[in-house]
Image (cartoon, rainbow, N blue to C red; front, side, top):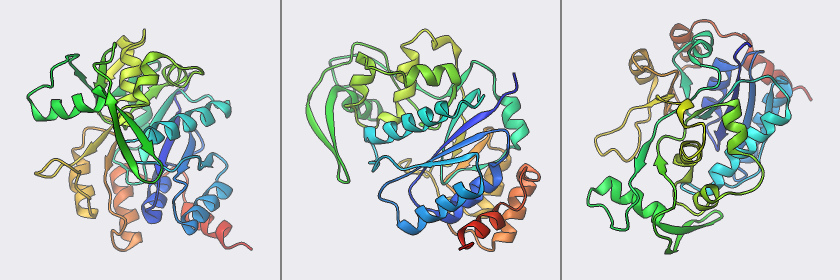
Length: 300
């Protein structure tokens, strides 16, 4: 079976960078589902609708106002997978990206890297203990799953009552995962179970949802501990660096993963930017992406 990808892309703003990403990865083999935050600016939504109209393999949904650290991000990811399953396309893997991603490998190399029936993600397993750990990082994660949290739309998370250690393995990693199709189907299946119910009340669930769900399943041995996206962290470690064009070029060459983020919205002359991306990944599979979107957006 030929490997193909369901690209699940979370976006909120960054129209220029969104167009760069789509231009770089759009092709007629894969499927693309974009979730645009309901709070996004109308002009940005209009551009995405023009993208959808111009390219039939792109689907746009807007079901949630997403809060950092909230379950709304997981809900958006689940909706993208379900939309992909409704397409009845023969995709073999679901890959999660944001608007600030750019590829550093050609599409053929990305497909060659995938293994049918295998998921790719990173994770750390968090010890189940009633005592708050001393190490700062582990203690912070312990707080996130030992307390209940409620998400207030457009505001953030409010800490509720103490929940205690969950009766299952809790694992946290990066939210930019690649899921084998049967793993994706399992993670978004109807109904609720104790793992998914608890994760829905956890802080930062998008960094733990697929890891915890799959590591507590029979699919555990079919998950590869491997990065799908490289981010360059600053000295403080709180946020990844926002990369300019030289940063994308320099860090991208040795990234060791198919994608890199976070890419700045403004990178300079777009012809120069497109030339740099082409030199990194080779010729794009569908030339004329920008012109096609322009024609649809201004055709009336």
